[in-house]
Length: 119
Length: 108
Image (cartoon, rainbow over all chains, first blue to last red; front, side, top):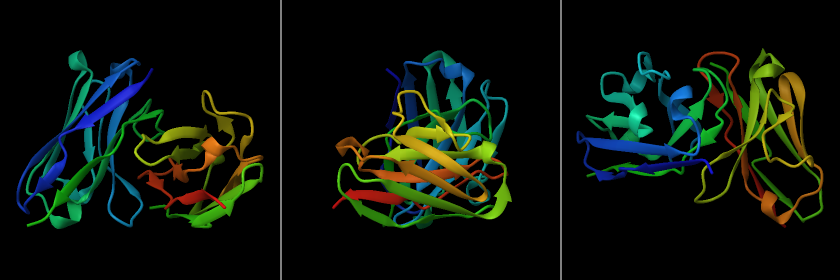
């Protein structure tokens, strides 16, 4: 059974940092691009960051460039999102998702992980 | 970027009824690049359809997709209790990928 278990969310003050993790099982993790997708309260989904199968390519939403870093460890079947200088507008449920290509549909998703940025 | 608008926002139907969900794009793109997902509270979203018409693994044939250009539709021919959920569309034909706001299919 395919599972993507996300962890690391929570409440953080503006300007603070948080690291999200997503551990996968049940499929060949290293074959897939990985993307973080978020949904802010009352809004639609938006992609945040994505990383290629071998980790050599990373792309970011403009509003998170320089603040967020996506990484992966294929040996541990794990994906990460280091979030620094967090802002209130980063408050959202964050999902990890897997796709065969960088701009493609997502075969697998994890459960959401709530990140709340508030003082 | 392509904006996807889903309608209606909420669909209230009874089991056994037909559900028709719309996804309209602000720009035309190939139907090869439209996906639908099902999302239930507390669960991970699940791929339902890719390439507009291709059902994902394990998706029953009561689900069907159609459309082209800017107008796409997901149809559930006879709703089963497990089909009540939020459905959202996604286009991956033009960068950046974008998602629709979702349609909630609720039990009437």
